[in-house]
Image (cartoon, rainbow, N blue to C red; front, top):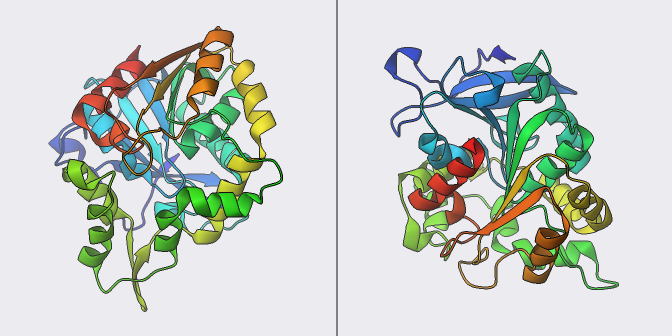
Length: 317
């Protein structure tokens, strides 16, 4: 892992640890197939693997989803947030994507963070990032001391005979529509997030930072940094890989916490994850501990200060 020389957010090591709201994370690029994957380090520059978190964001999200959680960690910890292939500062990496491609990219990040192979890293994933994290933990079971999965990883129900692409449209809806739209300026783009029913009542500086980071200025106007083809490919995997995800959950050996939001992607019940399936995995998988964060929706489980503190507590054990 080497610091990037490209234009991007930077953290001045002389101004603090990078946990506070006024600090930008340090960017480091990791070589992967086809180019460089952007990662961003919040917190202690010299934190050892045992106090380093590898954080993996959701399907249309970015590294900036983790600001509140990073700020909630102790000062001697670091959180390294990736921009997955096709998102954020990694949007120009070539496709195809898919969950296995992300797992391969993250194996390179693990090697950069823990070159001695201590196996002491903590793995953290939200939404699609939880599914990717689950497959990564199954692929590299000795790489992590602890795994925290946030409102994801449990196979999603797909009606028999249903077209996964149709199900994806119904599930992501406005998020997919946003990826194909252009807006006159950054403020107009951020206003889409401000109007989202799961975010509007809970708007804060972390959500603002997250939304503004995703705004990409082009000749045609401002659009999302997330690449629509990448999102669609990854979303399809989420719906068709249910058997693999089930096997990965049942095969967990690393101590794992699943944090569940009882409210869904539009801020209302039910949550994203099927409650009966969550309860079954909780009862049947010895390595898995499940906790529901009362009042949290699929997004505020990362952005609400009290929820972010609970995620940080699960990370630090």
